[in-house]
Amino acid sequence: MNPLPIDAKEKVRRHVDAIFGAGVSDVLPEDLQFEFSRRTGRIKNFSAGGRLAATLRTDGGLALTIFGAQYFLDKSTQFRENCALPVQEAVPFVSEGRSLFCKHVDRCGSNVRAGSDVAVIDGSKVIAVGVAILASGLMKRYSKGVAVKIREGIKGRTE
Image (cartoon, rainbow, N blue to C red; front, side):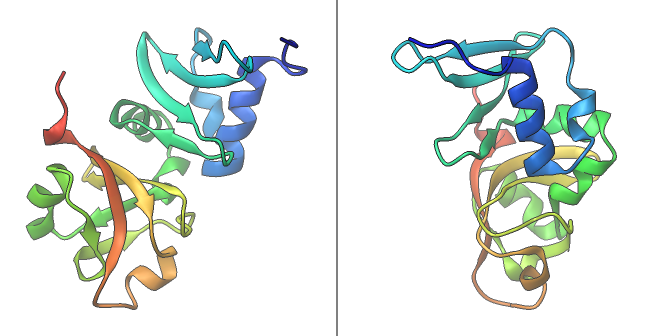
């Protein structure tokens, strides 16, 4: 098994900046913990403060956990551009893990693209994380269809 040609911490920082915007990785703590694949030696996921923050996907993306999204939201003002804000009537459903539909999107950050990881927020609290089906400009334009396919809702967690 070959060692990584780049430091694991630097690799994660570059991934975070490339996906969520330049400067977002500046809030990552110094004591990041990494889990590596035994077979390939690649980074599987990383944790901050002993809690799982994100998993590196095989396509180069990051699958955020609710904790990871809340961490970035609390510490970085730029991360809000990767978030979607639902209308108040949709909050209970989205927090249970149900999909966010286009007609229920109140506001969407400019950095949201189709296929990118999105944090769904209610005020300053992350209620769900998922994958954007549509880009931010199209979410408000359409009145039918799924805007964000939710991976994990805050009420569906067992912690």
